[in-house]
Length: 108
Length: 122
Image 1 (spheres, rainbow over the protein chains, first blue to last red):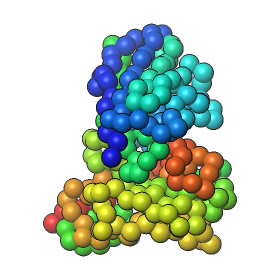
Image 2 (tube, each protein chain N blue to C red; image 1 turned 135 degrees about the vertical axis):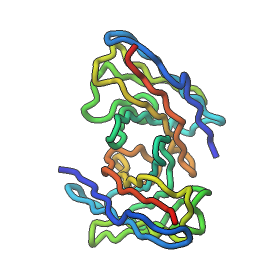
Image 3 (cartoon, helix red, strand yellow; image 1 turned 90 degrees about the horizontal axis):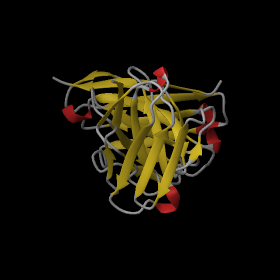
Image 4 (cartoon, each protein chain N blue to C red; image 1 turned 90 degrees about the vertical axis):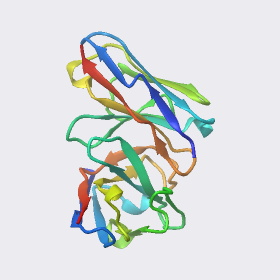
């Protein structure tokens, strides 16, 4: 099983600032089958990034993903008020599919 | 509109069974693999199971293997999760999710339902 570790656990930032979230895998994620999801309280997760770096439909270009192998990054270039949420990475290249524990981005 | 609606959750005693359903609409159901993901109260996301478009490939998390069974009825545009021998640690909000753009299970999850809550308690 591929274990995903996310850091930091919580990121306290102000609107307009840049957010950099890390996801590290215990072994290489095949074909960059790595996704990022955003979840707000009381809502289902929403796909932001797939294939490590491709934005999902309707996702603003302030969200970007990068990385390969075992190290991946989600960057939010300028935080908007609606971006304060929990972010999860997920690998879907091998079963069992696994999620990271999440990074909470909250308002400083 | 692409939509997934889960149902069948509720309060159940430990050791008992429950069957969840997920009704799909707004897309060609049998073109896509589907998954179940759960979230315990206040916790993160946990993948439960996935099924390919034709039920030819089904996978489970170790935590539910041998107790849960995933199936689908493409004629009814529906996904199911049969949960047997339920435990307190199965208490969670259960989501169904559609994969992005493929019959293969190995794709990101682009559409999620709102979830159905399962509480296992005596």
